[in-house]
Structures are given as C-alpha cells and as structure tokens.
Figure 1 (tube, rainbow, N blue to C red):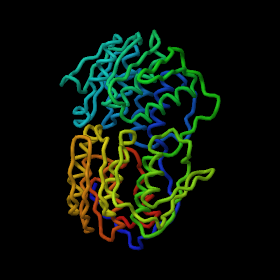
Figure 2: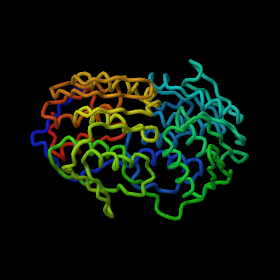
Figure 3: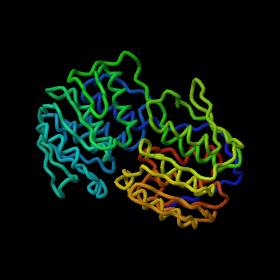
Figure 4: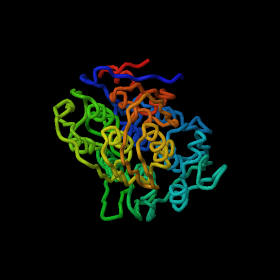
Amino acid sequence: MQPIKLTHTTQTTNGTVNLPASKSISNRLLLMRAVAGFTDVEIHNLSNARDTQILESILNNVPHSKTIDVHDAGTVMRFLTAYLSCLEGEWILTGTERMQQRPIGALVNVLRNMGADIEYLKNENYPPLKIHGKKLKGGKIEIDGSVSSQFISALLMTAPLFTEPLELHIKNELVSKPYVEMTLQLMQQWGANYEWKQNVIHIRNKPYQKPNEKVFVESDWSAASYFYSILLLAKAGEITLPYLFKNSLQGDKVCASIFEQLGVSTTYTTNGIILKKTDKQLPHSFNYDFTKCPDIAQTLAVCCAAINIQANLHGLQTLSIKETDRISAIKTELEKFDVEVSTAKDSIEINSSFKAQDKRICTYNDHRMAMSFSPLALCGHEIEIENPTVVEKSFPHFWDELKKVGFTIV
C-alpha cells in the first residue's frame, strides 16, 4: 500500500473513538476456551485485531492442520507452542522471517523438561518448530522471568492439561508482570485455583469450569494511549473512549496516571472514560520504568520529544525482540526531527530539541511505530506514514478513528 499523509488543521480534537477490544484478553480467552474444550462458550466483543483472527482460525482448525503459520503474531507463537505440546498429534509451527528471529528457547526448554517433544527445524532456540504433542507431566519447573511474560502465561493457561499440578519458579525480574496477573485472574474466573507467593506460582491441574456470566472483552488500554498522546499534543479537546474501566485487568491502564502528570485528565463513567486536555504546567523532565507496561513506551517517547522535555524511559529490555528492534527504530525516527536520543539495551534517553517539520515515518512492519508517531501531525506539519496497513495487527480501524478527531488523511 502507498504511504498516507496526515495533517490536522485545527489542532483541537473532540469526539468519541471506538477502540478495538483488548487483544491480550481476547487471545487468552481463546486459548483457555480451546484448552477447556468449551466450543459453545461465546466470547463477546472479541478483538478484530489480525493477531486474534489468526489465533482463532488456527484453534478452529488444529485437528486438520499439519503446518501452522502464525505470520508475525508473537503471542500466538508462544501460546501455541505450549498448547500443541500437550495435544496428541504432530505439527510444524512457523511464521514470518522476523518471527524466526524471535527467541523461544526459554519456553521450549521448560516444556522439554516436562516431557515435550520439540525440534528446531532451522536455528537452535528459534522457530520454526516441529512439535510431537503428548501428555505433559507439569510438576516443579523453573523459567527466566526477564525474557517474556508470554512464556509464563502460555504455561499457566495450559496447566489444566498437565498430569500433575504446576509449580512454576520464576527466576530474575519478571517483565510485564501485569500480563501474568491478567492471565491468572482470567483463569480464576474460569474456575482455576492458583497461589502466587514471592517467585513461585502453584496451579492445580483441574479442568476449567464454564463461566457463569457473559464473557465480554473490554477495550484495549494500549490503543487508548495513542488518544492520550493526541490530546497531549493538541491545543484543546475532549475524547470519549467507551468500555474502558478503572478496575481493568490490563496493566496499560497506568497510562491514565502517566498522562495525568503531562496534562491529560481521565474521568471514569459507567460506560468508559472521558479524556480532557488540561492547563497543567508540563514537568521539566519525565522518568519512568516501563518494565510492567512496555507496549506504551513508544507512545511516551514520541510525546516527550514533541513537548520538548527531557525523558529517561527504562525497563525496556523486551523491546528489542518485538516486531522490530523498537529501541533502535524509535531512535532512528525521532532523529529525523532533530531530537537528541541516546539508547542502551533497556533504555531510551531523550534530550529533546524537537523540530516540527514534514517527515516520512518508517514503520518497520511494527503497528506501534505507525500509531505512536501519527499524533505528530498535531504539531502543525504533514506526517507521512509508510505501510499504513501494519496497524491491522492490533487496531484495524485506527485511521478511521483518527478522522473522527479531526485528522485529514490522504
């Protein structure tokens, strides 16, 4: 697809935005439903993100598939590696070239210790995988928590299939801890019993129970972060976001408190939230640890650069193994606006000298690069976004929602 060009002439944003449903919750519920065999349980407001569609399609066709292609969906690769290892059958699990560069050895090693039969078909510790599924024992296992919380979630959700209770020991600092908490809370809603003390999680190997209430997926807080960013960079405005709640399971709900510091207020209603630009004076600097919420780090990096405040964003150790090396990509694109950026393997430091100007943004096949840089059109210049269809991974109607709040897109 050709690049698109974004402008915003009024620099005032008002309207109601329909966010996608949470991809994280949707994908977990789909896997749990498959593990439980609850084919008649309907999941309402399921995400229409490409990753979720890929997972749902694969799970519906597992008995008839020999080669399964997850494309660029990292969550799907990790969840299916654990799930297929527990099923009778044989599969080849593969993905895009970038997916074959994203390590999965830590999860495979744990599964092998429980009796899984998994082979690497190309490079050690990386997809594609050949999986000979069979009953796994569970029991006492250890995993490095600093690599990916999705490895841990995959093991937890498949635990009802193990022949023994799971005793999962997490070594090193656990990244994206709220996602593990989300997994456990969703499992508990489906009848799972767990105990989490210090670095050890115990899961009984009893089957899931059908939920008593309607299964409804709330909106995505990660997607909401882009509209916080839009209001921050606007001169004035108010945006309503339905189906976001204060007691959300999502760790990225912290964007409400983060942006409160920067001048965007959040009002909770019975149906969602209302964001409003305030006259709060900007801080001189911004320092934040994103270990628990890495998916909103790009949004904040762009925001801090655009409002010309010094920023130290750290806890970013997982960003280099995402859809692209996000730390490197952010540095490259911000430097197009004369921003002074220094990076390390787990941090980005912005000593901002942002110069608003017409620029083309490369997206690196990463949906979050496209969405986090789009609000810069509010700075009074045209922003061109390469490969705009990349947003289909998590927010297929993103560009339509931008039009609702005053953006012109050609």
